[in-house]
Image 1: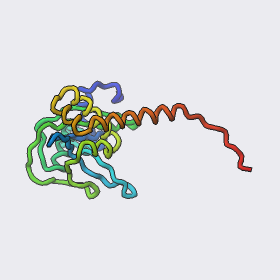
Image 2: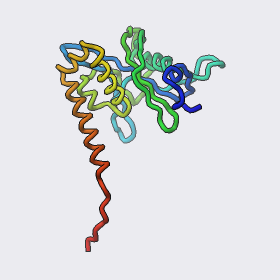
Image 3: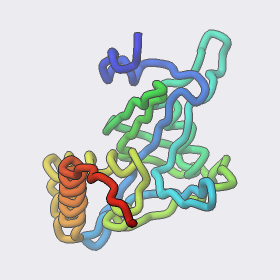
Image 4: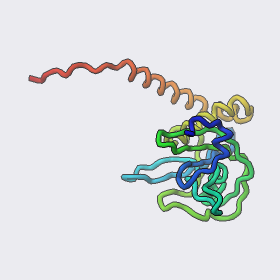
Length: 201
C-alpha cells in the first residue's frame, strides 16, 4: 500500500527505514513583539546555501526486530544531534510525500531542555541560530517554507499572542505578499502561450 493511501495517524506510526523519511522541528519564540525561529544553513552543490529547520533523515532501528524509526523518533534524534537539546513536546504541522515515496514531516517543537552541546553536526551545516520570522519566511528552502506558512496561518487563528506579534512585526504582511506574488506568477504562467518563432532574416 502506497503512502498516499495512509492517513496521518498511520503515517506517524509507521517505522521508516534508512533515509525513507525526513523530520524537522519548528521552534519559535516571541521577543519585543517580534517572532524568531530556530534555523540552520546548509551548503549544497556549488556552494548554494539553503535555510532550513533543524532535522534530518530516518535511520535504522536499534534492534533486529525494528526496521526503522517513526517520524517523531527521527525528530528527537536529529534535534538532539543538531541542537544539543532534548524535545519535551512536539506536534505535527505538515507533511509532503514526494514522487519517489520519500516523505517529509514537520513538527512544532513546543518545549525542550538543554542537555549539552550538539552531539553530531554535518560538515556542511551551521549551528542553529535564531532568525527573525520575516527573514526566515523569505529565506527558507522548499517544503520548510511551506511548513512555516502553514504554521503561521494556524497560529494566527489559534494563538492570540502569536497573532498579535505576527501582525506587529510585519510577518502577516510578508506572508500576504508572498502568497499574492505566488498566485500572480501562477496565473501569468497559465495564460502564457508559445508564439511561433519569427525569422531574423
